[in-house]
Amino acid sequence: PMTFSRIGQLLSGPSGIQELMDDLGAAMTSHPDMRMLGGGQPAAIPEVQALWRKRMHALVEDGPALDRMLLNYDPPSGNPHFREAFAAFLKRECGWDVTRENICVLPSSQAAFFLLFNLLAGDSPSGKKRILCPLVPEYIGYANQGLSEEHFAACLPQIEEHGPHEIKYRVDFEALRKAITPDIAAMAVSCPTNPTGNVLTQGEFDGLRDLARKHGIPLIVDNAYGHPFPDVLYTGFHPHWEEGMIFSISMSKVGLPGVRNAMIVASKEIVKALSNMNAILALANPNLGQTLLTPLLADDTLPRLSREVIRPFYKARSDFAAEVLTNSLGDRTRWALHAREGAFFLWLWLKDLRITSAELYQRLKERSVLVIPGHYFSFGLEQPWAHAAQCLRITFSQPHDIVQEGLEILAEEAVKASQ
Ligand code: PLP
Image (tube, rainbow, N blue to C red):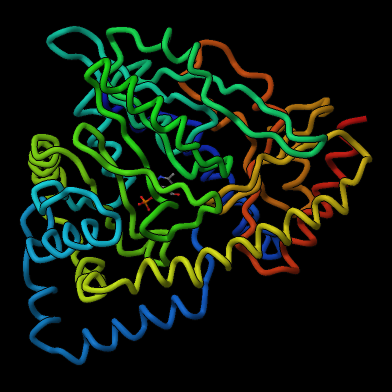
């Protein structure tokens, strides 16, 4: 067998996410009747699809624009016209004090986080540095991105109970203050959170901002589901970028995961560093997404579509899924959902589960239902967290009949495994 480099081994070796993705892929291929309640892709929303079709038609009709797009390598920081238009858009729609020098386009937010986490943490002249997740469960896609061992540190939440069937995770500031040791290079939080659907409160966000300022470290906010698009959040909280923060805004959840583009909003220094890294990694960015979006940035088309179509679509799906689950679990076992404040998922806590959620995942797969077991979303911890192994992430963006059948089977198996 070949011997790979240390970094080669870190990236190519088995990882939780790769095993899970392989397993999901194999299950979907061998069982065409599989009910997919595990994925993260956006739903097909007719009004949104229609907008992208219209933009694609306009682009193909305009020969010279199409040629320019296909023929050119853009600068590694993104198309200059797009960066200008995006900065003006953020200034107008969000009130952020940014210019195009605060915007870096990258080939997806997944790639952006890989670059950011390794720019900021790992071996440094002042010793080993780490990224701190102030509130796990947190996005599974970060877990294996560090090019050093133990790249992440994390804090467990306080679990607030709202009646028998709802919980909300809150930042544990006492634990967090202790966790920000001198080796912490930055804090990173997705808001709305994948997997839990949590949205930080204004107070929590201000608390994170103040701690980051006090320690002179960036606060990284992953806005994949947030404002200004797709704005799939129901609490009304729209965090505000300011100097010292790093925001990531993806094109994926507004129906364009295939274009692979995200925009980082950061200080000029960080933007320049990311752009130089991107030149080494990819030379230039995919430019289809930037070309499709640019004319839409001149007005409020995207925030309006998000508010009036995309958000209500996911809210209705979330309500439907929660209702099916409530009816089928009833009081046959003790359970709670995380407060449904945003994103595309339900986070279910089965309080009496006697097997791990990984085992429940296997049983459900045998009954043609795919979900994601909760332990994948708690990384960076010193001890395994028993609570996460009683939780599941459920995607509700599939058609109603699939969600309904899937959740009814899930409820049966969950009750059986909790007795
Ligand atoms: N961040 C979060 C919180 C996500 O849920 C996802 C995708 O599911 C990503 C980042 C990655 O998105 P992208 O398609 O921009 O790589």
